Length: 510
Image 1 (cartoon, rainbow, N blue to C red):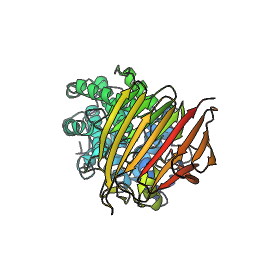
Image 2 (cartoon, rainbow, N blue to C red; image 1 turned 90 degrees about the vertical axis):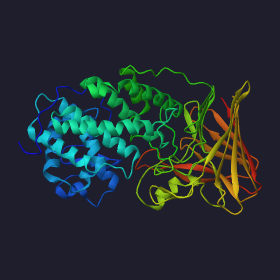
Image 3 (cartoon, rainbow, N blue to C red; image 1 turned 180 degrees about the vertical axis):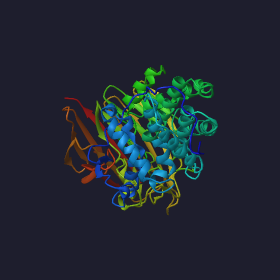
Image 4 (tube, rainbow, N blue to C red; image 1 turned 30 degrees about the horizontal axis):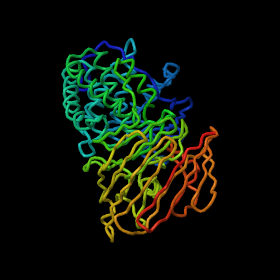
């Protein structure tokens, strides 16, 4: 037996939900991030024609966990064999720790359903897990290190023998530390991105399922703790979802990358987790820094969060004191979203303050976002008020991100949310050149009535009348609900220099 071989497998069969869209097709065709491609030869796995993120997706093998995966077993074997033959050990994107992690979980789940698995596949899984264990992403931490730990745990629970036991022990050691670190007391994932919260929560649900499916004693010892943390995380997700059923766009967030909220809540219910805790008129997640107001007419989500852990701001946007709003089930005010990673002017623009529904001062962003995943001087935010009374809700928060400017400016935003209206008051601690940006969902018809009033017509025939104490104007912009997608939309811009701006949103039902 070579040092790459393993002692066999534990006889359990994965039965978790398959949620991904088809991404592998006949004739070597593939589709990731709304961009198609061909895997024609060995060079295709690391082709310079595609972005790093696209190539990572090529190596994930998410199609093994797609909704129609049972229809393509022969194709899957073909791609798996090609990957083994055309990706020699430790060369290329496929051997980097993050794609290693996601692929290992997909392979383990897929092979666990087979009556018989050839030794070469088990040896490859063990070799890949060994490579992963030697390059854990301590330098990145966060969701990457969590993915590393999950993969080692899956491999260790599936394979038999001393090597498998070492993988399992290492994976669980990391999980014990990272679950405690990465999930806050109010349930949020600490990177404060609803999209990454979905990813990590799904990971946690799969670990719970793995414990119950494999009946591995080491996993079962952790099961109650995992279930408690998952229930907190489920409620936090519920507070961050729009009435249309999809996530809000704070920090790096887009639809279609992670499991949808609907899939997550469905999975949790099948695992007999409690998802029944109701939302109230006001929900404030104090540790993570997000509040939700939900009444009969609209839903408002308010960001009074910091950028995330000081040592891990990679997925942060300069969106301090931004908000999103739906009227009924229709999104009206939206942050710009995320359509790409990497280092480019467009990536930077999507992270800057002007791409969010908040105030820019002196032409600067509230936090100094730079490169693809970097933040220099950043805003720190303080929640001042979160009150509910008979006439509505008052939320107030401030941030110090503009104190690096001359003059030093503190931005305070107060939101008075009533049943039929919402009043937003922005106060700057001193006079400065500033502008309030509001991004409108592309399905909304925008009509300027006069210099301070804009009428927004919704597809459901309701209207929103927007009024400002200062003159406003409408310009063209883009909204990015998915990676690789840019949808034209409108943006309201309100310049002001008095140090105070009051805007009123009135809901008019037809």
